[in-house]
Image (cartoon, rainbow, N blue to C red; front, side):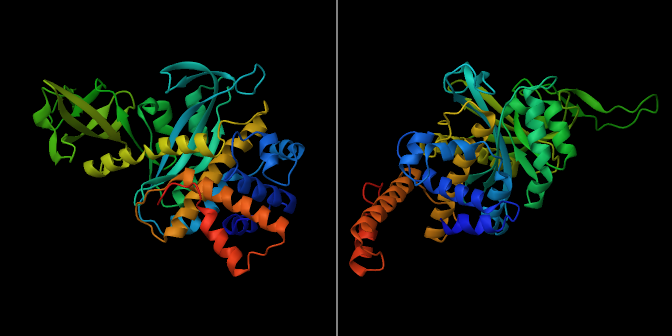
Amino acid sequence: MNPIVKKTLDAMPLVNKPQKVFIGLLLSVLVMFQGKATFRNLSRYSAMSEKRFSRWYGRSFDFFTFNSLMMSDLLLKKDELIAALDASFMAKSGKYTDGLGKFWSGCSGQAERGLEISLLSVVDLKSNTAYALDVQQTLEQENKTRVDLYVEQVIALAQQVINLGIKYLAVDAYYYKQKFVAPIADAGLHIVGKLRSDADLLWPYTGSYSGNGRPKIYDGKVKLEKDLKHFKSVGTLETGEDVYTAKLYSKCLKCWIRVVMLRFRKKDKTGYALLYSTDTELEAMTLIKYYKARFQIEFFFRDAKQYTGLTDCQSCRKEAIHTQINASCAALNLLKLEDIKKKNTQEKTVISIASWKRLKFNQHFMCRVFEKLGLPLSDEKVMDTYELFSRYGAIAA
């Protein structure tokens, strides 16, 4: 069992020994298997049978605590962390899979039949990479919208996220809804997100009180090009966009927000991108940095789908799907942590998950061969061969 995984499981006293053994073996398989992460294929790369995988996939496991403990040493050393939330579509065949429905697919640009997962992650701004904390399958519930389900996921874990020193949750434009923003702001997290260019915003009234009636609060609707002089100019980004900011009132969210406008020219036309935060004191450049960091969650989805079997669960049961998607993300976390440990740096680096999977598979294969030949790894020549061929076929560093 990987030392990082063993240390983490030993710190979870409520997990019994058989489940600790299974989770340890499962993660060791997910970081090196080849092909699809089906029960039968995973059994080919481990001593566990297909039936054992199927049986244990139906039992619950606290992956949020596992991920938090596994990354605790790393996260406690970080000064700047934010949380990020996003959903991803997973294709799924069959008629009786739990949670099957119509969900938006970004790849095809339309709603498709399949499954959806919602990932709450933590983004390390210094190394510019995302780590999974909790993954939930979107399961339709009576009298609840999908936004309600996303809110429940975040609120249930909000205090634990805050305990990690995180104050901001970065989301995309879909989550610009009062029923999402208001409950999470009440839970103690500030939202960083994106607005539509035609968002209904109001200027604050800064004039004097006339003495008659209710004091005036708002000073008219924001018109971007016409009211450009009322925004505060912050500077220009390296990519050429001019940055403006203002504290405005959102009629959609029914609260004051910090708005950052990125103004750019494309051919002969002027374009705008509007970012916002519920923290009205947040600096404009910091807000931009937080929102850009949100895109690391997209790279996490990509790597988990390509390398650790995120979309490969063959079971129709929601319990098994939950185990598969969380174990897949935990395995990707493990590879990223091993990469940091090997490079011994907290700075931004380039990581190849494909190379790490090749390395893990080569090591597993050589251990099996040397074991059958009766050759101990303690032998100098055997260890030299082991080190030499561990990176066979991997992308050069």
